Amino acid sequence: MLAALTALAPLSMDIYAPSMLAMRDDFRAPEWLIQATITGCLLGIGIGQIVWGPLSDRIGRRPVILVGGIGWTIASALSAITANAEMLVAVRFVAGLLGAACIVAARSVVRDITPDVRQRAARIGILSIVGAAAPIVAPIAGAAIAAVWGWRADFIALTIIGAVITLAFAVMVPETIPEEERANASGGIVAGLATALRDRELLSISIALACFSFAFFAYVATAAFIVEGERGYPPSAFAVVFAANAAVMVLSTLLYRRLARRYPARSLMGVGLAGGVIAGLALLLAVRTGSPDSVLWIASMLLMASSGFAMPAAHGAGQSLLVASGAASALTGASQFLGGVLGSPVTGAIGTTSGVLSVIIIVASAAGLAAWWVIPRDPRSRRRRTR
Image 1 (cartoon, helix red, strand yellow):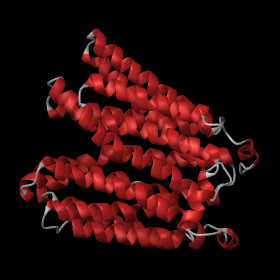
Image 2 (cartoon, helix red, strand yellow):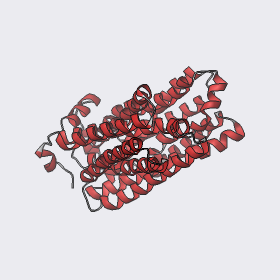
Image 3 (cartoon, rainbow, N blue to C red):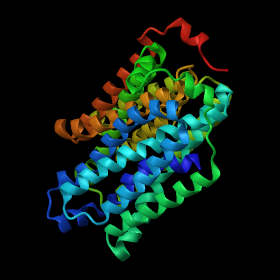
Image 4 (tube, rainbow, N blue to C red):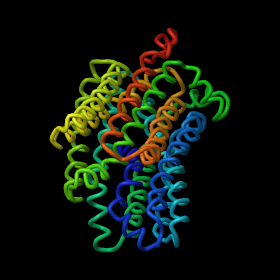
């Protein structure tokens, strides 16, 4: 159930990705405006987590998830009947803003019901597995739906999915945060975030995650231009590469889940960040030496494998600290999505070649690794870890 809630984010964007050309033609809108529907959704998810996370510490997880789930469902229904692209961008931003409530509170529920730190990190890995698998399934399902009923049917499908998941949560999952913890959640949203930001270890994790997410989404935004434009492969080949990358990410996250029971999440995050640097160097070396295209695909798979460690480990490490769960989840979640919001347009502005991408991956991953390693960790953070 919690995994289904966190899958709302990738579903929001990936299910209608194959229909973007049809949407462009239907609305007679420029491509950048259709792409802005995804950017708007990402921005809404990033901002929304900052609001909903600390709020869930004060009023409970259930109200936040129910409001978010109902709102996301309504926004999906409105997306199906929008009259123009500008309206769709606005509605997708609202959908992201409301869907963020489900994502951030679901991670907090894991902490509420799992007192053991390493078991908690492993369970967060389960949420990440679903999030990694959704990009594989969603475009395939979305393309099949749109082929029969048109692109608007993709949003009707999202409406049905949102209604089912929200109803199931309302029936099956009780409130998980104890009343005394809600009473002890001091201040409002700003106060909760300020408390979280004062924890230097959580801050270093969040900055590192934002940097890695920048590199990850830079690749996602550039991959089609490299495979189809630079290398001259047909769209079907890109679909194969994309599916292979997503499969590698799922397998990597499964491995992370096993290792998280034995090793600290923060250490595993360092492995993922270092893997991102190595992936960027491998890609740059392949470009500079004129290696076969297969070497480029292997380098991209290494980046996906690294993300299967870095992203779930960041959330697991954040939830291992005795910072209010919702605020910690908000900070790491917002860092991930806001890093992605910047990664796509910045890469598009600089260039969409494999050489430019390799440098961006190296620089962003190295910056994340530096934040993970260099930012001084407050010795008291270790004493504040939950057990």
